[in-house]
Length: 56
Image (cartoon, rainbow, N blue to C red; front, side):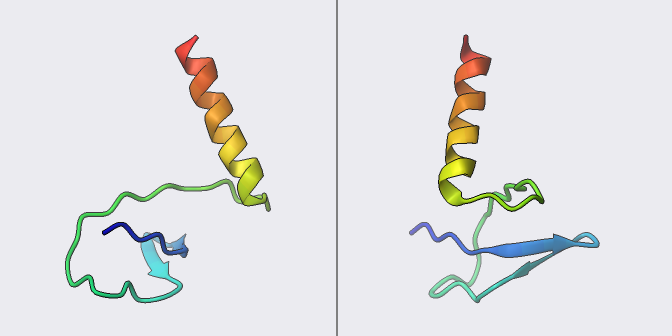
């Protein structure tokens, strides 16, 4: 099962906003977002546009 949990990376450590439910051990992928405030739709559109421009 996939879960997405917000967190903060600071001084080499990741602090999750909440504890994942039902997971005792798992591989993870960490994506670093820009530090300026953006809404989710802006973030998604920016990611999709960058993928399109790299493929052309």
